[in-house]
Image 1 (tube, rainbow, N blue to C red):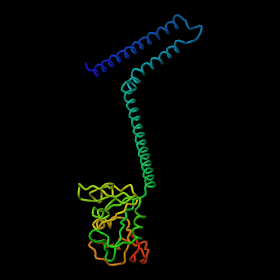
Image 2: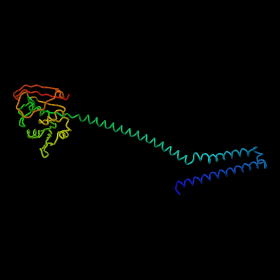
Image 3: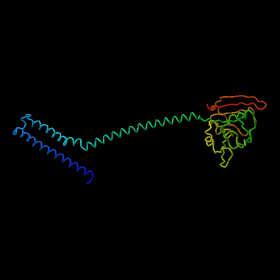
Image 4: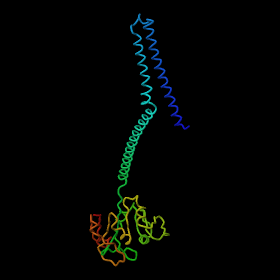
Length: 292
């Protein structure tokens, strides 16, 4: 016999016992009422304390029997184990729905708290670490001349001083030829060399194989500078944020040239003009360009 069959069998036996008790109760009630009638009317037991007392006693007994009847045939049917199970299931379902609503509310609150913390962290990082400004710095002569035979073709003391003051404390990014023309890492600066030669090494320098790697290596610097040469300038001129140019107002024979500055992309934001002197052989200008 399965547990379900056993439960049905036990419930059936229980119902039989309940009905048997009800029937016995009814028989006892009928017999007892007759007995009360006899002892009152024939034996005259109730004459001294209450007339027709047996009627009230019978009514009271009948009331208890009706309760018994209701319990067996009505209450047990509508409020038995099935009713208890259904009510329990309803309460459990209601509780599960309430728990689900609480979970959803907590998830929304957790998401809101996480988003708030993310926004705070993002704001903190934004405040503590300003946007990086990548700058090209170069000295160019008439016709955008840069140099010849991998060397500078002029010497301006003011330009060298400005270059040192501007780039000190920052990352400077250059191609391998530019580094070899300088011959050494510049002091108080982080030198990043771009080369396609995977075996190239330079003491005190960071060697990378692409512009992207160079920018990634300088990401902690708010103002890294690109200092040459011509091919690096050409690849980066419209990707950087700022141009810091020294214009040398003279014509030279050159084999390396700075790319054309597109005035639809770049806006001149400052210019300082200077005349030649005992330390600077040519007229020159310091010019700054920023993205439009």
